[in-house]
Image (cartoon, rainbow, N blue to C red; front, side, top):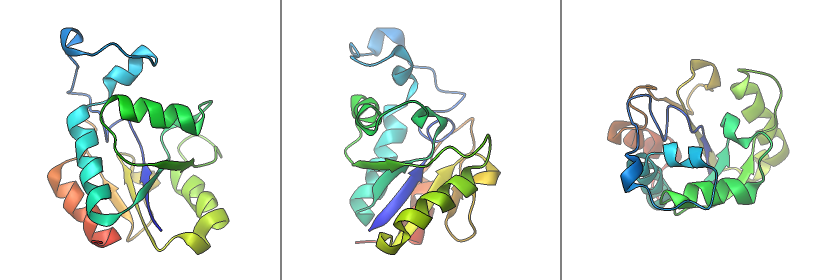
Length: 152
């Protein structure tokens, strides 16, 4: 399987994107899910469509959340993929270690993976696409992620 390790803040939202409250549909989830940018989620969908990858949440949003809740939050803003897991919590700003821990338990099933994150410490060489928090995921980042994962 192919896996996307997905951070939320700075990847599928950005510091420059603020949703217009009048344009938001009624959400059955906590209000902050409205802070996820549907246009950036659509870019994650493009990666999934082109590669067949599934998502493991590495974002701090995973803390105290169930996989079902994370799936629902993402679907509220147009996510079309599958959340298959979340990285364990090791310590603050140790995302690369948390990803490696998840891979240690599932690595035999993982053909390829990419990490989408705005923090440099999340990177594992050859598998990392770093976003800019003020912008979030870009079409160029999508191309980089697809190159790492490989097209279907």
